[in-house]
Length: 307
Image (cartoon, rainbow, N blue to C red):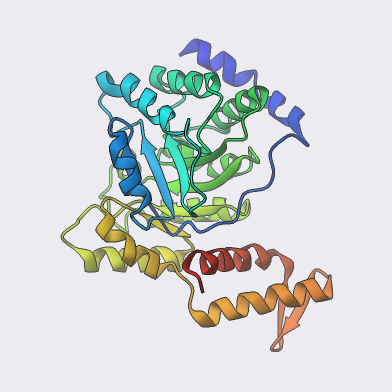
């Protein structure tokens, strides 16, 4: 789209002019699991919120047929006209790609409403400019809407580091394994996608963002899903998606820190607050300030589970 390209080119400088604006650093909160709920069926939204997932994402993209997208968009935005409960569940709307007409229609609808979703998920990113443009538009409108970005294209993978650093609105990166496997012409399996997964984890970590892995698609293989979740957790992912509520308890279990880890996180934060320096020594080990974000994430999970 030539017009979109002009808009993108014109927003890179503008994003840096909003320093000190309404946006803050990425929010630290549990992101162990997420589940989609179709925008076309708003009656399913309360069930998704009660599923136990840390993130509920209202779907406007791949899960909605082109002919149904206007209706899904209207239903999704209407959900947020009602004040949302403070229940610990993060609410997101996945819009269509900013490089497609449906995505531009989604953005225009978000800008037109006085009750925007708390966060938007951006799919099929290829460049940081897409994020910068949306950030700029939201800032001009005065919306505090946060952003979650999906790395699922080869171009997006190449630009993952720059994407992670391009906007203070970004809270998390998601790895889109299905689309990535199609682009790379490989199997959607752990080994063929390990390099791509690692690139996304590294990009997110460099910006202090949470990073969430793609859902496991075989509902009849719970053991395989648990193994995949453990692998993702060991690689550095904060959580993993679900395609059905029955997967969520297992995912939450894998990505929930142990009681000892929670106790240690509390101690580290307490020691840093008392020392007021960039590093402390605990049990003979040197611990530097950058670990504090991970410790706060652990405590956010502890609060979520009441530990």
